[in-house]
Amino acid sequence: MTKISTGLEDEAPEPEFKPLTSQEAQVWRLKNPTTSPWVILWVQVAVSVVLALVVGAWSNQPAWMWSVAWGGFAVVLPAALFARALSRQMKLGSSSVALAGLFMWELVKVVLTVVLLAAAPKVISELSWLALLAGFVVTMKVYWLAWYWSAIRSRSV
Image (cartoon, rainbow, N blue to C red; front, side, top):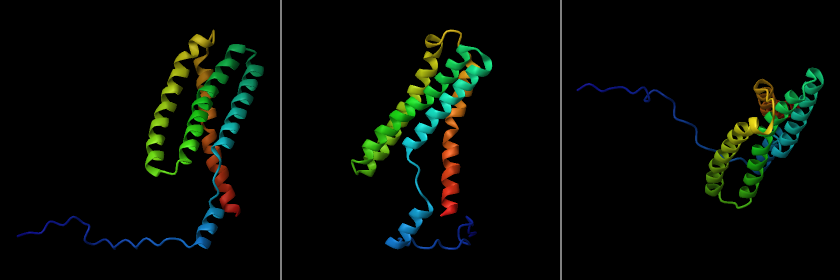
């Protein structure tokens, strides 16, 4: 009888989980600071407003400015609702409720974003989809900036 190898026999066993001491946990928290979702939201608002003003001044087309602003709004409003809902759920203390809430509120966030994007032609006359997309993408990329800033901060600690 031939034994079929799965390739798992040759792997080294995984090391056991070792909980951190309170001092080790404190050092880890100092090296890995968290960024508040509210800070990220305010930076998104600022980026969206500045981009809309720059596009409006550069193009001299108010419709482009409002299109960029609506693209940013379609990111910020759902994200603010999501952050508020999750911060309230985290206070409940139940991890299973928080996880279910995460999925539910993420769905609400996506649906609200789609609704806001679909409503754009009704809200903005002479809508520029390219400008709206630019505002949407640039505002969305603030998450990457937040990640970059937190990585820089953790290296400096």
